[in-house]
Image (cartoon, rainbow, N blue to C red):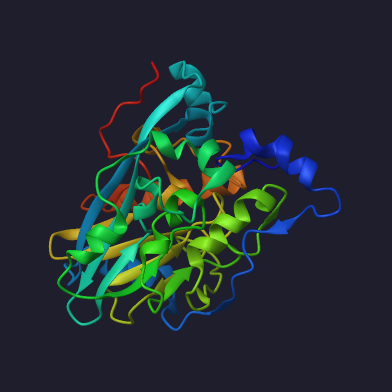
Length: 324
């Protein structure tokens, strides 16, 4: 059975009413073109260099505190969740982005944080109206908005790498300068659903004025550690890893830093408990079995390379769930 993304539970009735004759809308009609970065490589090439120090500096920024339903973050029907007695409720999370600094290629962001206009009631944010109300953006405690963070940097932003196209990962995209390229996984904009009748305009406003979104050219690999991987800059310092399931084009990133590898998994795992127990996300995912398979591959990578610093989608490792 198809599972649903974060706001599905609350917009289904409205979306269905709007959907007569129009079901199956795309996530956004913003143009897409092939990425100008990324060379397909066998997973073995990533594994051969993963433990070697690299040149990239990674800074993870918590843009805001937030809270959402635990049933979206975790598959509560999983045997481990059942054994632990986990029940649905509101779970505290954070909205992150990651800043990558490469000595030659410059400053990049993985995901986008929180748009400044979300903190200013007198301004029109890209995410607004019924979607903002159902997402309860008013409950976000913003620590730093993306526009403010960018204004404090000593170098211009060279690009944005999206882990996927859900609103909480593009909620700062409107603050990204229009000439900055934005990269994402295959099939993200084309994913069709009834709820996109409501969500789609928000995604389109977030990307308004920017050039075509640049889609990674993943080449499926047989019998590899992952579905597909790309050497982003061609020097083995940053790898894009296709981890479908949460969304069709969900992408994790592994950066080689002077201190060791940093793995940014996006929403392949939202929570610390889910990562530590191998329990995939719940109803927020488009394909739960594929999500479970991608999570298992990422956890295997971290288990086989103990030096990997894992950065999750919405929590920090070691954080306990609010639920018992």
